[in-house]
Length: 112
Image (tube, rainbow, N blue to C red; front, side, top):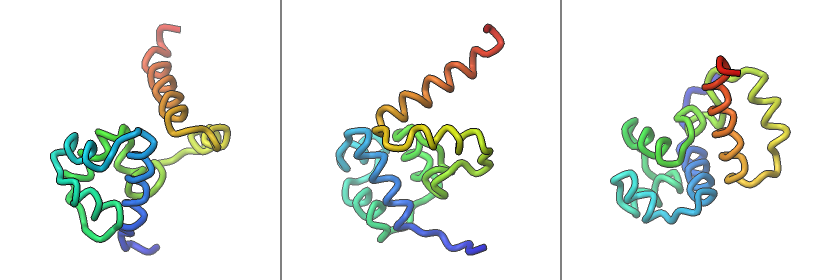
C-alpha cells in the first residue's frame, strides 16, 4: 500500500466540493479563516495543509475528512457504495440533499 499523501487529489476534491457549493475561494477562505491564496495553493496541491485546516475545510464543505483524504469513507461498507451508484450523474447539491435526508432518517429510525 502506498502511504504517500496525494495533495493534488485532495485539492481537486476540495475544489469540486467548493464549486458544488457555489463558493468562491475567497468565501471558503473566510469561512475557514484561511487566506484566499492559501486556498488556491491547497486546490492546486502546491501546499500542504494542517489537520486543523483539513478539519475546517471538511466542516464548511459538509464532507468527511475521510472523503477529502481518500475520496471515500475510511470504513466504507457496501451500502454507501451501492447508494452512490444511484447518485452518479446527480448534481453535488442533489447529492448533499440526499445524504442530509438519509442522516435525518437515520437519527429517527427508532421513532418509525
